[in-house]
Amino acid sequence: MQSANLTRGQTQWSALDWWPPLGWWPEPARHLLAPGSAAASATFVLLPRAESIHSARSFAAGTLAGWNMGTLAEGMELVVSELATNALRHGLMLGATPLRRDREVVRLSLIRRGPLVACAITDPGAAVPVLRDPSPFEPGGLGLHIVESMSVCWGWSPLAPQGKAVWAVLSA
Image (cartoon, rainbow, N blue to C red):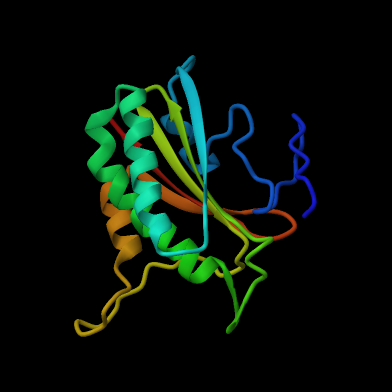
């Protein structure tokens, strides 16, 4: 496995090596930031198994408690659960063939800027996240609707040369 180049000033990130660079914030949500907002970040690697969803929720709740932002925990746990599920279910798939799971990872990053916290989940998949309107009898498909209802804003950003970061911003 190649070691990731995590040098400061790197401009191209892939899902294999993306960690939030210092000062990273989703571009479409920059207007929400107050000048001089206190910043902090924490990142967690999710293993490609179902139990990782619980671990991701626990990581998010613990991180928010450490930042004295426990009031966001319930909403953040829902957002993390939905985004992590999508990343593990769809992001680690290439068509009908799973990617090499020993090389591909999903990362959860929480980035605090003042009273705002961005949850960013990276995966190596190329599929664009889309709000769907599932039929009433379909057993899923409402995850991004939950993310949208719990967050100030959400979106996604492509990562070069492959992958994407799906993010949501919550406010205390």
